Length: 121
Length: 135
Image 1 (cartoon, helix red, strand yellow):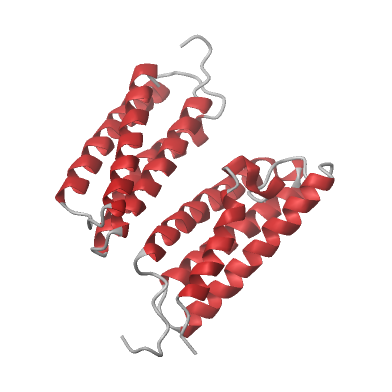
Image 2: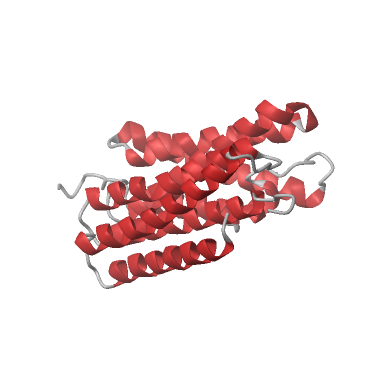
């Protein structure tokens, strides 16, 4: 894990959550902006996951590497599924669904950060 | 939609509720699976309880997401059980921590999960009540 990237990911997830709640509050159904914003955040998560996976498979020793890799996969998957579920019914609540997915992903990234205890690296 | 029919629990704000339930179903089940697979003998009761909580969240998610009176009954049962579970386990863990060496989702009223496990069944029951068929 790269500390600076984790911070960027967290800020992006927080922004997505706020955006989702804002569109629910202003009675706007999910649409193109939601898809674009979510895609950007998922792209960041993908970059983070690929860097971390390369380092784990490249020899970085973690005490719970299996759990770490499962969390890594989950961190990328939650938002696309959430976006699908949010846009399936065009009501104001789609944004709040996205916010829930973003917050859950934030918790997953926090767990990833916790599990990344490397001797030195 | 007729006036006498119950409203779908999977529509509108219900979708937010289902999203939260689905996330808890996933995390509680995954956690219990890892606990049981890797260190079951350390705290069998707590890990079995984790697994039970996971199953309850899965059933509640299915009940809320489905349509019709059968799914609604399923949701009532699962969410009701969930409330009883979090209250009983929460109280037991506050009174005596010795029997629960490892945390479950419901330990100390779900403190490890920001007390969401305590709030969730209350919101769930309120939503089932709110969307029920008017008499």
